[in-house]
Image 1 (cartoon, rainbow, N blue to C red):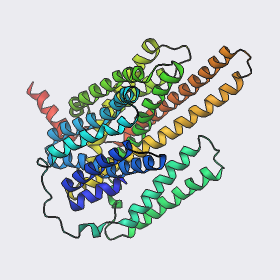
Image 2: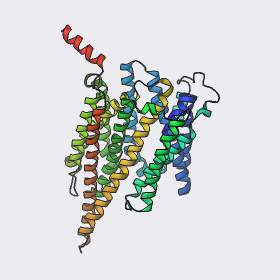
Image 3: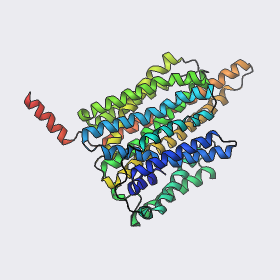
Image 4: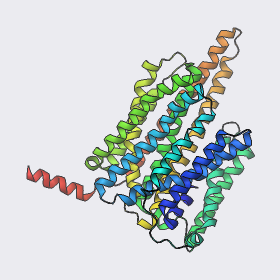
Length: 430
């Protein structure tokens, strides 16, 4: 629903959408923490997702419409990239502490005071909408929104089911086929709608299309990295939740460093070179991480490649975000922000589903070979070894994803001509 959330922000104003999304997310978090059944918890989580779909594009839209001077805008987008990326990563640390000492409900309850505090501060700091029409929502392309929502849901659902079912199984084949048909229908709707949710002309922009394509790959590697390493540390190295969270903290710091450095390097290297550099570093890091085994050690086998991988991803996110949102008309800035967030989230969902499936199948195959043993201790060791083998293959798969992103970086423009001219003038001056 991120595309819909971004478009609503364009039509009714960023302030209204930001405050409504934040209030709804806070209330849904409270409902989830108080849930007394699985159904209520799932409904609350869905409510969080809907509200976040309106909140997330609004945050980036506030950045891109407030900071219009290129240098200031790059710094602001860099700060946004740092916060959004490391905020989610830091949740692994905080989530471990809250779960172990206070219980899982506090993973949801912690959002309530945070949301209330931001609501109290943001209300007086975000400018009001600039004369939006009262009937702006009537111009929404609801058929297009419904088609893309159903298509992406079916796509992710079908890919997730590949973990336990083959491609020919109806639980996989039917949703994947439906996703293809729905996406085709979405294109038809957008080409004929008077006010399309996503004007197809926007997708012909090289910077927007290339940036969002690469963001899919980045999300497809970033989200699984935390998931796979968390499981490896707990299920293979047998670390507790808090210890695992602390072990993931250096990666969060490396992401912050990478994002901050990228802001300084972007003007010098340009988005293409900076992105390629980040993806090459992440590819090397993932390939190194894929050597983890059942007798591995965090300090000697995980820490260094983890830092390298996170640093590379941190370097890449800012240039992709800047490229995908630059030169967009103010009337479509919310939609552009929604596209960036959609690409990252869908890429993360697909990457996580695909790599988790690879890990599960590899583990099952390895365990089937190792299981005919009689000693219980050896049996347990074989299970841990099979799990390690699965996670190693999935991390190698993540290296393939980031390597693909490195190649796709050729789609992005090099350094702006104005930047090259300024460099030539500086050389002549010296």
